[in-house]
Image (cartoon, rainbow over all chains, first blue to last red; front, side):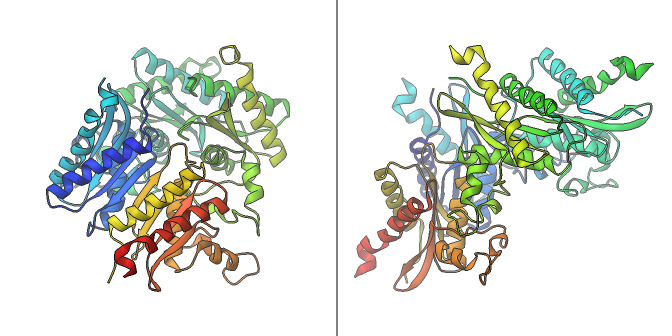
Length: 140
Length: 140
Length: 140
Length: 140
């Protein structure tokens, strides 16, 4: 059974950093494992300082509920079922940029990205997530 | 005068776990006593990690204000009297899934459930709450 | 590979509660899984309120460093290598009562007990830990 | 003027990870920049979960006071001038494993290592620190 070890976390992180660079952005990127514990983190030069915590919180949030933070955010709006959920667990993030990392439908961790618009954050996070499908040992 | 001791808390908890299982769900369930102190807790296999804190916070919130968290949530919406209350007390939860445990109109504790939709959370919490009426010593 | 699911956690917890009762004590008992997430908790009638947090912190600490909290405590004394470690991780406990739960040398979680002298806390924690060896599926 | 950018932080981190591997250890390694903000982090497979926070806190502490955490620890003992300093700043670490990163006597950041004995933590941190002297652009 494949777990998110450091080598795999670093590959996911590098893929996200490459996408960020290609887009001309500067991001904070965090990767957590199945236990929601930080496994790899990088801050690109000039990235927002306030996004360090947000990147980590996005990754944590995505693993805590096994769904993209963007999806959780829809439910957390005023009048919606989970309004106010962001104050639990010492602070969650309920906007785009955090996505689960999945192997064969099983969540093995999550990636969180922060440093630009939420659209860009999300695109960079998905680039990290997509890296899993490029790893030979995972596709055979 | 009946207090929520551990034996009773465990019966409430087991009734909630049984309902969760019957519904094919995986829940975190917390029971607090009249002092709002944790008395029993269980996490079913595979339940969301982020729901551990939320289950406890729902139980705590329901006892703090002696009302279902769902009811408090109505008052906590934008423009309503208690908007923002969720950031007090180190973090409250203002959506369904937490209900007081009552004997003859007197609150003896509360149960909080988290791990699925708020409708399911609420149904499982009510199953725990309903267990109180099934206990012989409480109905004679 | 055996993981600490809820059923197993509850058996460990019940064994600790039985030992506590046999000793005429009133304890808080917490069991965490391999990810250091709370899986089962119980507070016996009249147990110290301040020990709820300590029982959880002991379990967490024992899993965080895969050693009994008592052993960590020796290293945390003034003049010793880890003096002051208790302020990290949002608060650790560095006295007896927390022990790892191990299967074939692999840590699958931890138990933390608080509510009496540290000697009693430790004895009750060890009773929970010892339950693992009594489970048929784990010894064949 | 040389600053600790991500590229440099990653080189320092990789040097520490290589030393840890050579010693047969499993470490958490954190690198902060001149502003004491996290720039790179890695957790090797199986490293203590409780050491994630400690590695970050060691790096932060070393930069906060521009001295090795081990040196601060001497001043933080009972009866010494800074007794109790570890509870400030949301939690400092006052034992070995955190060292400043310096270029020509100017502190540009710090590295924090946690996961083994403090002697091993310190040795791995120094390996990261020493990497700075191997970078051509920094020595000409």
